[in-house]
Length: 309
Length: 314
Image 1: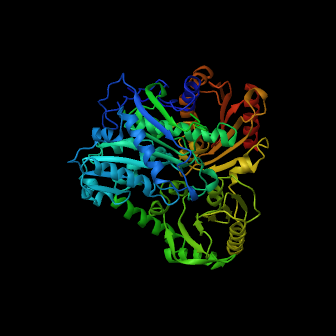
Image 2: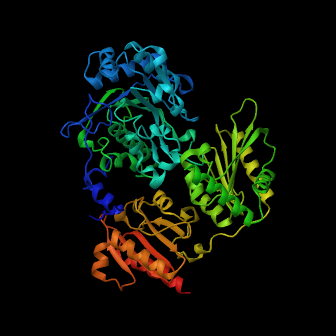
Image 3: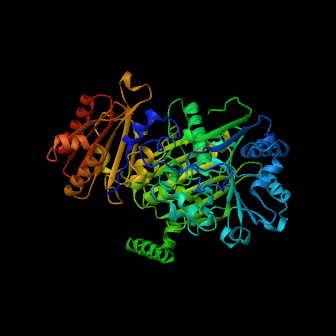
């Protein structure tokens, strides 16, 4: 059968039905399978009927001077969110649902010079993994050089954590995209504005190993300028974290928040440039998870002012 | 992939050699354009050079933008001043003034600063172009003093370039309905088109490095369309008239199939109402395709299209 060409007009049709993030998912193309809360992120075996749970947690006191995270507040947010994600009363029980003492754990972070994940979050995640009985020498935290790092090439579990930001070529620096450093030549995935980044998640180093995705929205970048794609005037103190096991669901909620901020800031509907279609193709084309808001259970915790979604 | 990179470097070397310029010549030329200091900020060694194969080591995905405009070499230099955040100068040799202008039009946000042949200042970023060079000057923390230094740097580079370059000739074919230079983009490829105005993830207009494209916008001019609504005109110059005809057929089939079927393949101009209640009209003249997007009425779409096509006949 001949491949159908998708155009702007399909977006226009979909916009009337699903004005936010699920535009492509509800456009009549094949819908992706939903990931369930208790399975590895991106699992293709998830029951179609279940919703993907995503936790949005915010705390107005999490940032101190110079917008640095206060570790105690950040730690409390992560613990509360992980517990809520797995429906456990305390974080310790929740972490034991995804990390075993015999795991080798790679924490894939992001060190982009203008907006990095930050040591506070990395340290807390590492500490919680070790609390599950994993010795320190089997926990790695890195962004670059993963293919030469035995804690990542030999990982049995991965945690995926990065800040949310717009991206010059992919539309959004997403949790899906964060795994690009498992590829020897990342630019080989740049075709059609990184449309098929989700295929990275089929690589043996990654497939079925990601236990948790954390999209950091402390000071997200909602618009970029110039070759370095950064300006302080386009970050804001959102003071939030998005967590989930379905990476597509986490990213599609993140896209929605960035778009809502752009609408608020620019006073008009100004879509991401280029569109972050890799997030939606991860659903409709590659079935890595769901981007359909109707199939995402979004649980909001904490500070609600300016939540935007 | 290694073979591709080696081949790319080889081709780059051949192109540079064809112009009588070695890599060393290009590097020297770029270095000569940047001053050693500006406004109290001093150059911090070492300089870094990036070519189309290595640019991703520096700016990852954004590198695709400069590659889409055929850039040849980038010199990146940091300037430091005690107690202040760094300034970053990125100086691109784009190979032609048309592409230097084009990459400048990729991001037109900001205020005109009167530097070079065109410039914008926005949030600590001064962008400008002159002749075949595109220049990005960035303050890692914005301040009045940093802005003064960026402007001084920009003026120094523009002065060192020494001569103006020609803008792309295709711009002269834009109808007068689209007079705002802050809303005109020049490029070659469909990912850049989609960046400014998404049409399709597929290359339904058969765009490529050899095609020249101008996209211009203006307010839609009707209350029904909304206060911020825009209408667009797209001009694409192909190498040959038959390429333009093929591209229009491809576009019509994917984007306005009903109009293509109803109005027949022999009809040069086509018009269709899209799902947002606006109008798209398309036509060709010789090797140039013209498409109007998001016109508030059918009459408006036809009027702009006809005016553009008439302009092509001159």
